[in-house]
Length: 122
Image (cartoon, rainbow, N blue to C red; front, side, top):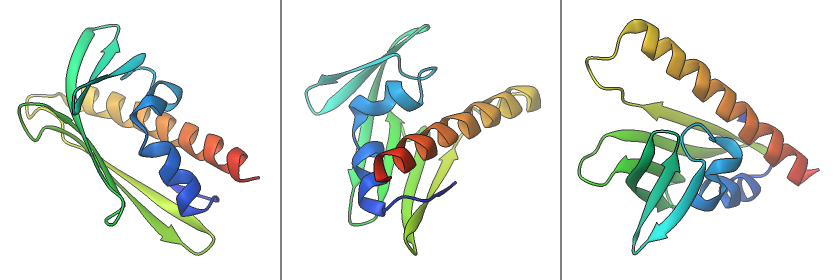
């Protein structure tokens, strides 16, 4: 997703787990710290997660606590703006319809990130 906002503005937003309910409410209605990890609360219940943040690489990864399953994101500067790249690994048993539904959700979430960050940079 191309975002017409400076890298540091977007980074401040996407690297803060407490902002997840603003841009990914289906995944995180609420996010609370749990020691060095986080607990995401949504309609399905509670999900303990690890959120790995590396500003030098521009990465923010949202992973299950006990395995490397989840989403991997990278923020890359591009001129006056940046690109936010989002990779999600689905369970291998997920149907094509479920994968397409998840893709549509992520597109919406990334559009929300773009709108919020571009407004913040204006």
